[in-house]
Image 1 (cartoon, rainbow, N blue to C red):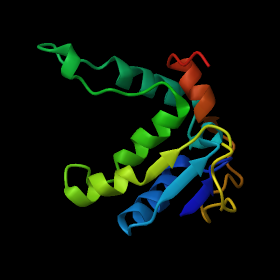
Image 2 (tube, one colour; image 1 turned 180 degrees about the horizontal axis):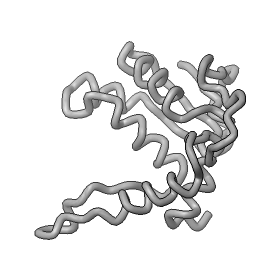
Image 3 (cartoon, rainbow, N blue to C red; image 1 turned 90 degrees about the horizontal axis):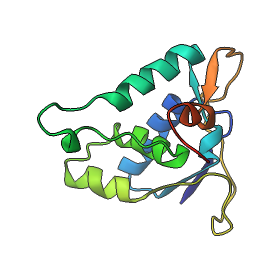
Image 4 (tube, rainbow, N blue to C red; image 1 turned 30 degrees about the vertical axis):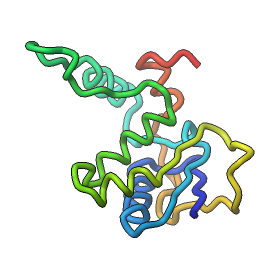
Length: 139
């Protein structure tokens, strides 16, 4: 089992690393999911995800894509997009993923930082917690 600390990590790079480890058959736990970042201008990112949340099918809006507002579920949904979830190995890999806000007591092991996903000199970014608040998260 790998425990990954998502604090100040670029979410896309973190997600690709996690997806690869899941497909290799390892269990992955992500802690501090709300502290991960998306690069880009914050206002543009907020508008993009607000527009994505408002997309609905005209015929049956209940069958529209669902995007969660809660930070840990948001991160999990983003990783799901990088897995072949319609195939058995993708569903199995997705089942081995756990994402947490903060650091729960039951997660054992030394947290690992993903190399290449650190914030570095990036200046234009938005934290997942902040983005989720803009799209409707109340916590």
